[in-house]
Length: 305
Image (cartoon, rainbow, N blue to C red; front, side, top):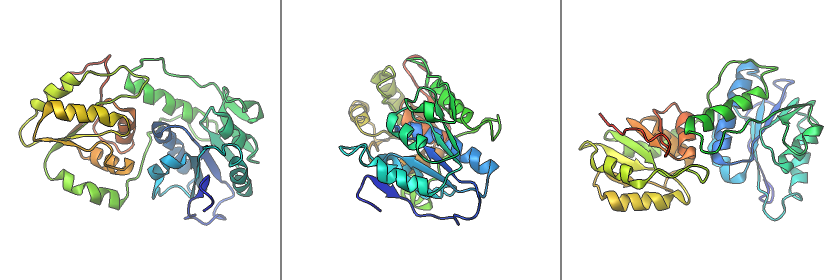
C-alpha cells in the first residue's frame, strides 16, 4: 500500500490463470460505482477465468469489500496531488498488461489512465476529453433533468453495457453487490420484527419530496412494524427532522450509522423499501431488494398492507 493516493487490493486469483485481464474504471459517485458493477457481472459471465480489476475513489472502496469476482481493487483520490498521484498508479496499471480497459467516467484523469494504460482495447465514452486516444468510444446518453429514479438507473446501466456488447452480448444485466457475512451479522439484530426502510432525501438533481407524506406514512404504519430511516451525509438532516416530526416509537433513525454494504444487507430483507435517495436505491437494486422509488413527480400512494 502506498501513501494514500493509491491503494492496492489483495490479489485473490492466479494472475496467470488467463491471458485476458480487464480493468474497469469508475471514479464517480457511489451510485455510479454500483451501476458499473454490471460490467463485472457481464465480463465474468463471458470470461470466468479472466482476472477483473476495478479502479474507484478511495471513499467508495468499501462498496467492493470482499467482492468474489474481483482480483484487485485500486483506489485513487485526487486531493491536492491530483495529477502527480496518477503516475504511480498508471505505472501499476501498465505492468498488468490489460487486454481491455473499460472507462465509464467522462473526466480527464480517468481518461488519461485509459489512454496510456497500454491495453489493446481502450474503451470509453465519446465525451471524455481523451477519447480521441481510445480504440472504441460511444455516445453517452444522459437522463433529462428531473427524470424519475427508474430512468436514472436504467439508462446508465444500458450505456455501461453498450461499452462491452461487441465482445459480450446484448442481454440485460442487473448490478450486483456482495455484502459479506459480517455485514449480514451486524444488521441481524435489526431484523427481529417486520420492518420497512425509508430513505427520504434525494440527491441535488431531483426535486425534494415533502416530509409531510413521510410523516403521515410513519404515523399510520401498522403496530409491530419497525421503520428504519436510511441515508448518508447531508441527507441525515432530513432524517433527523422527519424523526422529530413523526415522534413514533416504531421509528429508528439509522442515517449515517451503517456502511454501504450493511445498508444493502438490511434493504434486502425488508418487507418494503420506499426510497428517494439514489444511493439507497442503487444498494437495494444491487441485492434484489423490494423497491419503491419515490420522487416529487411520482408521489406514489404509500401502503403497508
